[in-house]
Length: 437
Image (cartoon, rainbow, N blue to C red; front, side, top):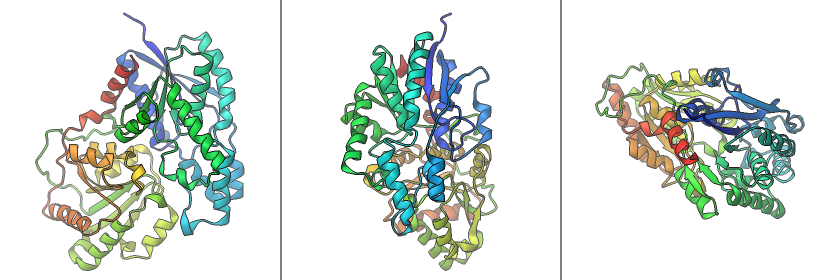
């Protein structure tokens, strides 16, 4: 029997880090051995994570080799300047009228002094360490996973030093095309540096992975040898996945008509038109008002919560705060409709929030907000799992919610998803193994 090939995964996020960013390569590492690959993980010894989730540790393979070195990052200094800088680590910051002068200064410093990001100080020591490690150990493939996109600079420099190295650049999110890029207050010089670095990564990586169809296409246009492998759901996390052939309505097991948002919700993805539609329904429909609950499980921006507290939704909100991954999945199961949001601008149509796949695994109906022709809309249409709206839609949102409310009122669930197995972590890892060959 042939010995497995070795793949070195360079990632900043690793358990006990929480959030969707850690799960992609954690799940790949879990299933890669089934397809003839031995994963090895290189990660910081002392990272500064915005969220912690000990429940993810159980997915780390017992025999997984983990290599670590120390990292220095400037977030402690930034948080002393302004406590809201803690949001930066989770990709959040205040926008528009909500920005204080401290926020504006912090964003400007972040974008122009730490290029491509604040983990850039880990690049040089990592390249030095890994150059020796790769010479002493037979590694078949090296993967860099970003953001933070500074990790791709580790791969780029290793590729320059070791030209025969097979390097995969995995983009969980785009670099210069991500929605908040234009909010970073970059100088022309800084913008040029970001774009030059990104272009070098695209041109030098043997394979560039994208998590959405649109991103893969955009990367190809910019010179990358790009493939799409979306994120997905793990069957072992979601034991109640319904059959892909299920088309019949089932009895509803929820005692309230609950619409839930699970995860991080920042100001840039705030579905104000949904809140308005729900406000109108509460005021106009006593039956709906008596039964409706808006549930949050995760980190919701304080300013969004403050606005909701000043609306008719005030007495209908159940805010559970941040939950472990396991608990979050339980809360999905006790919901009737699941909410997902994306940035409103057209450049974000390729973003597929990782949470959608765990939503799919529940069989629940999904209401989505984002730009027209979004990749999320394609997935919802293929799987019959819900409906996608723009941030300009209004009356059609009410129609969708009332239709689902009618089903719930009559004792039925809205579950009729199809063709979701393509998004299982095991099947996605199989696809990865085929690309790696």
